[in-house]
Length: 386
Image (cartoon, rainbow, N blue to C red; front, side, top):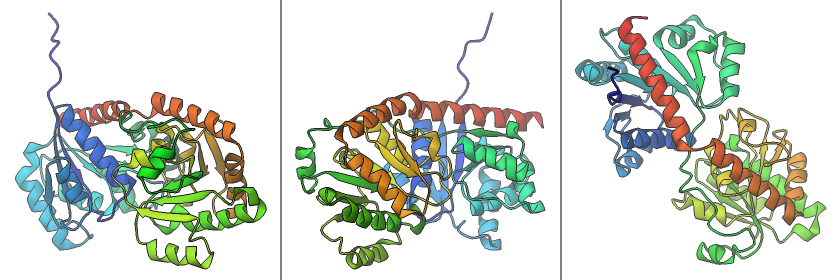
């Protein structure tokens, strides 16, 4: 008689040394909350001054504050002591950034009977080929998860890591939350609620970091207004906050765009802000995976203009759900923006295609299913000694 009992719940330990806020932190919380909803046990270790700490507590995710912010002996000793006390409680350790991955790897290497490490790579920043780094990724780590297939192939191509030891798991989003809240032709009430002018608007949803391309976007807006005077009534909404805020505000003033650009900071009601826009852009030139802001915008029925970096093309389908342009080129970006600004029917067609693609590919259950399978396989392999 076959045993049809469901597999026992997993016990998952996340580590994250980053003190900032962005898509990586949001993915950790989304995944952790999803795993808790499936009956698994979850714990997050992070520094006391990390922005993810209060956000995790607000979501009911068990969290412990621990100083793992630097690759130094005292953070290593603190983590070593914590793991020594709690190692038997967990099936797997999921590390997320460079520092917490190194600290976890060294701590585990100096303790017995430790759970396996699964490293999630959220960005496409190149990895060096030093012997120590190869040890971290190929010996200390049981499996590597990348946030996009392009990142997986990059690690194989540039670092020689075996494809069999890596899995691409795109971030999932809550499709019940991220969906259009009004028809494309009926945004007036939503804009008024949010304090926006009732005029066409494009937006960017991203942490205000230099490599997200906000400055290039401002330059592109100037070009659009100069080349296409009928489009001067369009507005740009910047959703998000970060270290570049003051410099961007100064640049907006320098370009005389104060009446054009709204900087609204971080927002909790992101679906409302997205639904109030006519389309979304992300002119990043940095080490992206598949940005959550793009997936969220597409799920809300928006066409997207973005750049050919990281794994963005695994979300934006060129000419179908939006346009992909070369990074760091405001003139080319301006041309792509103007295409959508000039054509209501094109925006509607691409927006519909975006929403359909998101519904098929971006659901949170796809991510949770894959991560659960990876964690179980890593735990089994560790227990079997291979």
